[in-house]
Image (cartoon, rainbow, N blue to C red; front, side, top):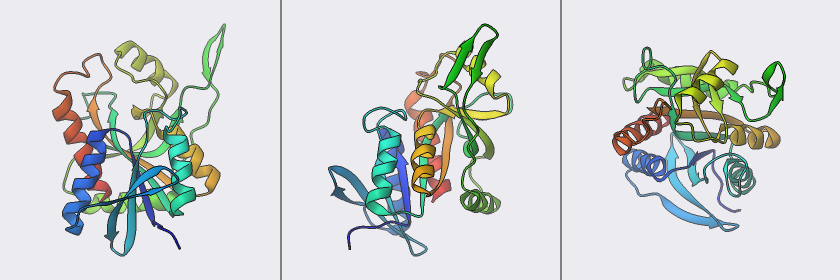
Length: 234
């Protein structure tokens, strides 16, 4: 029998991947072991409470070549995980009630790319897929003992655009006023996991406000956010 994993973690950027590798190496006292299946590289992160965990890295976005949709599909087919968790960084929506580094957990996703553009305005033509009830329960239970950054549960916007414009952020928030943040890969995570009937959830922490200031202290903010998300998932 080939390599299998109870949990597949999916990251996108180098800072996200390093944060996951470092967090799990600290917990297991061993370095992750890379292996390859069908030209895709995975990392064996070891076992946590008896559960084998692996990680793979996706390209940015949901629908492109080797982006999250195909990455998650291939990962499920190769490793047969019981759950897929997307871990990384996201944008927040309001610094008045959120803080840099706050952890966002998707109760629901709100993909915003599929739209009807008509005379009355823009109408979204997607639903609000709900994350796995089992994984949500685990995350909320973990939050009771968590003494790190604030964890916020709610609706997360997901689209192909790298948002760094406050006017556009305002526009997409009008589609989903209750959203707690946004990112780029969740729609692919949902579609692939739903198709393969595998539990899924998205956990990403705030690294900017999508307000045109993404480059200010970018490295430090992304590192803090990625580390917070990785440690909470662990």
